[in-house]
Image (cartoon, rainbow, N blue to C red):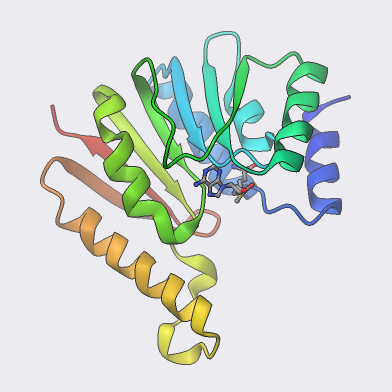
Length: 186
Ligand code: SAM
């Protein structure tokens, strides 16, 4: 069994997983910045968490959905990955340590709440990475569904929050469905 088998399994089950170019960019960042520990919000089947992990990099990852969590635990064990999976709502979890990187990939409407909740668990010079920041490049005015409209509004507000945040320097990248990389100014 390999990480490719996990990717195929997740895709076959219609589980949304990180896109290849975004994943490769983050893996490069992990290497270049010698990131040793990561907190991930939104495990799904564990594809991104396991991909980020190595002998040198530990990942703690949070998932509230029982079924997905069970799959993730099975794959972490199968692939002997340096990952701990926590069955918890990320809006309630309290870490007992700090991290070099926080990867936000949970409910899109909650990104600002996740950011504010976890920024204090970041090591000096740590980074917060958010996935799906462009959400399929959908435009609010072109969308009819009220739920999607509201989600796009929340993501737009989150982007403004990042741009105006004086504690972090943020860049927005066109990898995958859009990535934001926020570096803590310390
Ligand atoms: N990071 C995964 C990957 O690329 O392989 C994909 C994660 S998927 C896009 C988002 C996951 O976040 C879902 O499985 C969902 O159940 C979980 N999630 C959403 N909001 C959450 C929350 N507040 N706490 C914990 N998990 C959450």
